[in-house]
Image (tube, rainbow, N blue to C red; front, side):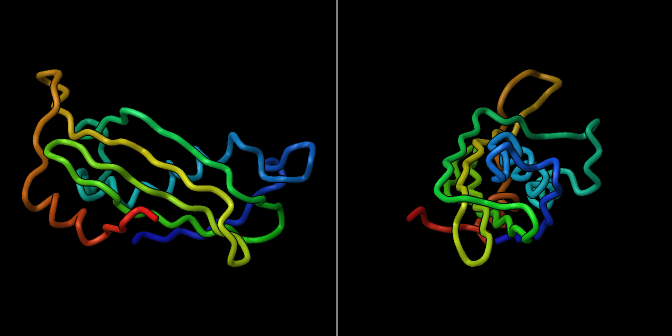
Length: 132
C-alpha cells in the first residue's frame, strides 16, 4: 500500500461545507505518483509508459475541511498489460470515498498496449489488496 496524507484547503470545499466531489479524482491522481515511479522512476513524460482507460469514484461518506485526509493506494487486479488501482480516502478513521483507476502499459511509439514485465508485476503485487 502507498499512503499519502493531505490537508484539505478551503477551496476544496463546496457550498455545503464538504470536500467537493471534483477534488477526489485529483487527490487520487496525485497519490498515484508513487505507483507511476514503478514504470517511470523520474516521472519524465518523454519516457511515459501508462495510459488511463477508466476512472470511477464512489462517495461513501463525508469529508470535511480542516482535518487531514489519508489517501491509500493499492493494486486490486493485475492483467497481462493492465492493472487496476484501488484508492481510498480516509478521514478520522472513516472511509469517505473509494475509487478505481484502470491503467494500461502503453507503447506510444507504436500506438498499442504492451505486456507488463515480470519485474513490474512483482512490484505491483507487493501493493495488492483483495477487493472487499
